[in-house]
Image 1 (tube, rainbow, N blue to C red):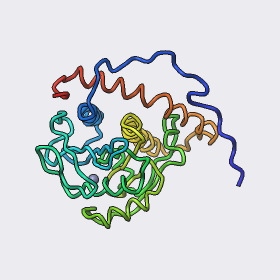
Image 2 (image 1 turned 180 degrees about the vertical axis):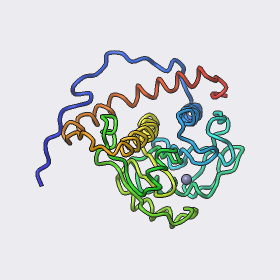
Image 3 (image 1 turned 45 degrees about the vertical axis):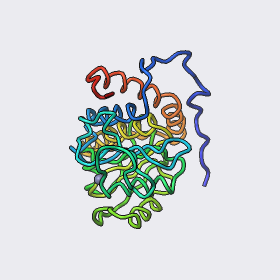
Image 4 (image 1 turned 90 degrees about the vertical axis):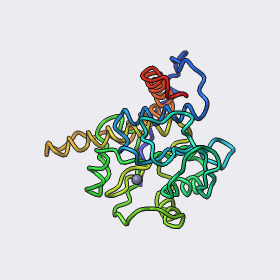
Length: 257
Ligand SMILES: [Zn+2]
């Protein structure tokens, strides 16, 4: 099969000389608390469901949210640390066995330093139809050749063996939709994973609304999308994150406590 050459994109085309900073130095726990609050404000979290895990570079332990707190109320001091067997080794709260989805994916994917899972509404509409979103807007290029579907639901993933099977199915994809359940987004760092998580909900909402029109959509070609994908990952993710952090901290500085 002939694969068309990808259009150029990303930092090789243009790199900004200056970018607006977050404005405050964040600890890892503070940054993670900000990520929870931001995604919750974006409609990504179904009340207290879901996790973000962050395996810091060079470490096997993971920062994670505890059981029972909603994403929008988390503060930096609520963040717990679990080991590769999902045992809490630091923190004042408990962590659910559902965390094995994360620990096994981290084990299988050394590049996936951050794993985000929850049940955002429009992702769940498509997940209930057992399908991936059509990529019909340039932001959808973020997910070009990077989507995975788990097409049937078979109950809670609450032990390491089932989670390892899921990780094997996911392979190298950075975005997986789980039928009748939700989504898993991964990234090499926190900005990349948060950007994918926020973007997939909007991509699914757009795909759903386009389906409702019953009209055939205009399509983008692979080459243009490949160039845009590079730009979104290399140029947009960090800038998105900095803005999300600024606005989240401004809305409630308590998130850092
Ligand atoms: Zn879930």
